[in-house]
Length: 226
Image (cartoon, rainbow, N blue to C red; front, side, top):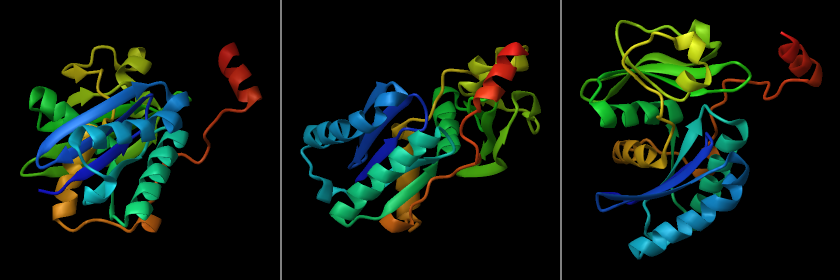
């Protein structure tokens, strides 16, 4: 069983997880403004708890996005730095897939649609099916909440539900509290590592679905007026 260190900072929750001989331990901290300051201390605490050094890991995994522009850059940058320093491969994991895995863990769902608040009146969303492994039904999309479409029936999860409640009023089978977490990143990365799907540190890249990361002052004022 590989030892996987995972980092996830694509939402307001920062988390790190260590998969060590099949056992998973993790730590987390809230507050997107402090992710860059909290991640490395949490990594050091996890390794100390497991009695390991970074060189004892087999790979570094990170939540590659989509998600907060700063957040996914933080996870990628920290993951790259740790991997360079210890000469380890990297496993990028799609954050929305990690949410689907969390949803399945919570309610054993096999058809899952996930939504992550993207701010600016938009959500990142995707739909997955679990059948002897995860399959993509709808690849990650950035859209207005009203444009989210379910294929067939699915359990719907993610903080997009609470960020835009009127858009999803009346939707059933929902789990709004799920956000990306390093625990699922580590589990998914384990399968990727065993299958040989890793990249070198310099090849690791975040997944962006949005080119524009903030509204202009005029756009914010127009939004308030509306």
